Length: 92
Image 1 (cartoon, rainbow, N blue to C red):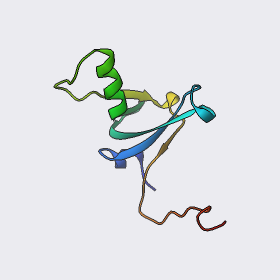
Image 2: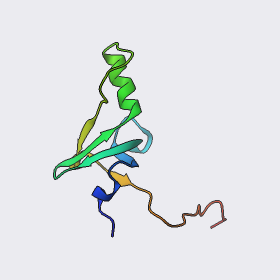
Image 3: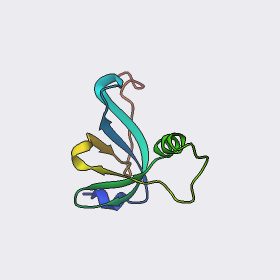
Image 4: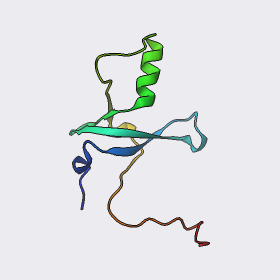
């Protein structure tokens, strides 16, 4: 059994509620920086772009990180060794 902490430093898919999206969920590819008792710390280019645009900056000298409490997360998808198949592609 894997623990979320095992995936620190890797890219994961974060699924969060967003009523403005189809199905009410938003999926973002993020880098998992740290897992703590209350939530996760992530790095995400879309978040960085939006923040820089809001601040009217072309760049920063620091990496922008965000904290997501577990209550604000719908699901977290990670890749583990093994084979994944598309049922549709195989006519199932």
